[in-house]
Image (cartoon, rainbow over all chains, first blue to last red; front, side, top):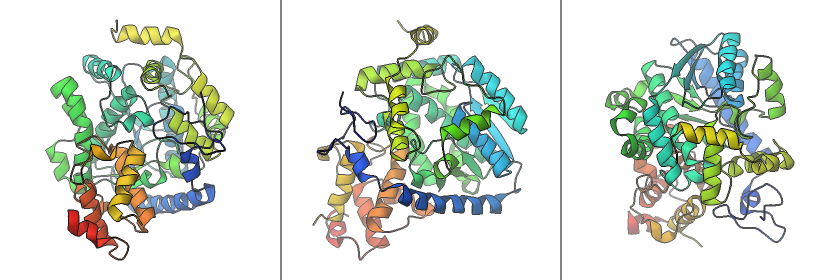
Length: 331
Length: 92
């Protein structure tokens, strides 16, 4: 399969075009590290200013959507130790967490002295959503470029559940461990407003409601939340505007007791379902759901092209895929 | 030279992988599942860079960004010297 000579995007990626040198249009449009660093520095400064101004106003300074993977673990460390924030971690257990991920979360929250809430949705609801996600598109086709539909469904629930918690507890920041490859710099810090969130929620809620009905309601905002405009938090993705580098992240979180699970696929450090989700995505679209994220990390020099290719090419663990399929009662 | 409307439609078609026939200037791009929640922020980043403006948090509302015609109208107010007023008059 032909791939960009600079990043890793394949010829099957939607909208891709190559020049004579075999470089894709995404790389050609990239404005360079100096430009990106300038914009990120602006956002970092704004976040630090806001964090200072909101510090100590409520019970917590920041709610972190905590998956137990390497990125959100590093995020907890960063906010707690570098920004001295009072952090509440929130995990949605999708039923497919690696046992090692659960151990990691217990160790890390204890080591950092962080309060931690775990929400375990009913397995029947999640099973219905995940099975439907395997059958075909649930969301805008653009979503498929950012990840598998299973991931998009799961993350959709987590995003709005976290937002609901942040509003109810009046926490001024809601932080996610998106990598610089997963989220553009402009989205790394934004004030949520009821009008925009109402539109965004509709785009996620309605497809999931059509699958699971009323059971999804507790994971989304209700009218009373939209009326509490003053309690809407900033969404922030600090890894996007910091010096994100896996080689530095891993030793830091390992000192907190974090160990990489051995049963997840090459692109996840917490979720067993990811392997099945990746496999289904590749079969449907003929490109990898992590192509876009890893390509951007390569473009920015945060990950070597060889390492990115190795992750994309790695076959999913057939034993794990089969076990997950059985848990979902797939034929 | 492309009009404001053409620039916006071109960005949406290129970035969200849709055909020009898939949406009208008054279609809600969120409701039609052309743009997802993250995509709105990509659109904001594009508008800021293309038109040299800063879109404030309180301006990030569907009334300004959800359709091509609303974006054109928003830009006409935000940076009247940078946009083709005809777009707004024609489709607004």
